[in-house]
Image (cartoon, rainbow, N blue to C red; front, side, top):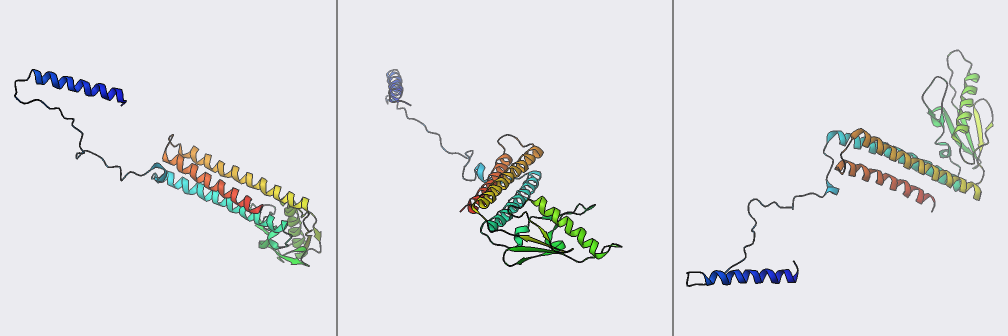
Length: 251
């Protein structure tokens, strides 16, 4: 209320009081007092109210979908963390079996993708070579040498498909052994490795956002609902994790 408005209101009250006193039959003047509202039993306290940002998801179906999305996003970030650790190892010139951790071997008529350590041993020789030796395992009526050759052939194909930066030369030693020379990384090789990490990081962000959109589409949550807010916060958290991993790699 402005000062002018308040002054006019006070003047109006005084005129009313003067008029009533002038026409009153009482010997005592009338006095006006302002009444203020008092807190009664119907008043509600705001102490127990919880801010929207701190309200949990209470719907069981939404809780289940939230846990499902969080599990998928965690798996995506964990994969990126392992990939970036392998890239950092290669960029620093260290030769370890972890350089081949992302390789997956598939065999005909088998949908399962095997890790290298499941079908072979991976070792380091002369601090500059990786050596893969497939396990000896006889299958049915096929000769042992044929089985080992077949396994080694699929291992070599898996190495090519993995497209590992800097690892493109595979030398067959015998029917069970494959040697991979690991060259010292050059400046260009390091730049290629970091470019690969950036591409993988962006792929992971896209994957996280897809999980987010899939959850929202499945839940059909109302606009401005707590579910929408919580799913967005979940997505932001995992995207920030991706940025942190990539930033740590570039230090």
